[in-house]
Image (cartoon, rainbow, N blue to C red):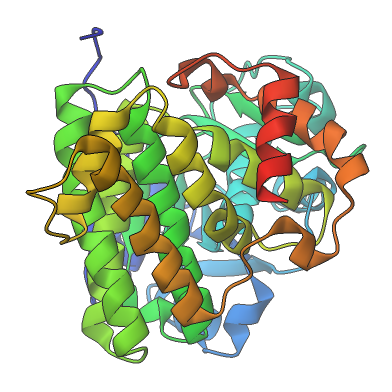
Length: 386
């Protein structure tokens, strides 16, 4: 077993009333006499009144809120630069991010670089941040946040739409508030796709060479909750308990991924999403069964164990048959959801996938795959899913 370092950041509050802690946290983190905050928000959240609710909670505590909501569907580092300019001009002592993963990563860029004069492009190219970050509070709303406990920024580069991942001590939140109620406005199919995206991260971290007994404990519990949550979301799309169970699994998955590492399918989904207008959750649903089949070549016993975690009776089956049952379990649910099962269903061009394969291979967590892969291997994986 490889050695591992056990330390958990950030502070996390989880529950239907978690958002009510925001004013106290904001006041503590902003500091006395500096009652301002920059809110980086997904504009789609205006429909659910979530942004108005946050502003109300903060303004009741006399915390002035400046909102950055100019986040397009295919946001890149250029959007993060706009938020960064606003933060530097406003001199807000606190950043709050609410929305999906891309919105949260824009908030991370803003908090990490606001107190410095470092250019964002230079940071993405490897320059180090010399100044301390602004405190950051994250409020995820998309039923998963696989990078929650990692000191990293993952964002498409505005210069070439290449997915970039930069690690820095300043690139992490002080606190995360997970309120399952905030995910209620997602469509049933999007909720299910997000659950599968969370499952992708959990499964890949489970078979990673960086995994340990501690991460395995968390990830096995995560898989049980995510699988149960997915079935509940399919059977009862509007049931709050289904969202709660899915979020519980996603939280456990985030902790486990932070101690281990995501894998090939995650890298491919990130790389394709950065270059083409295909939702990452939809890509995760496509690549997860192929990622499982790839892992069976070197982590057969772990993939086989997933069958029991999914609730399948495989007591009389060999590891190979049990592992095949796992893939069958997932594809059955993808069929029930009528989710596209091939990359070609999104009108992608295979001959343009080579660049995305190279982008995916360059992500640092690819060094922890069950078996080493080259750019050609990544492209072959993409062809299989095409």
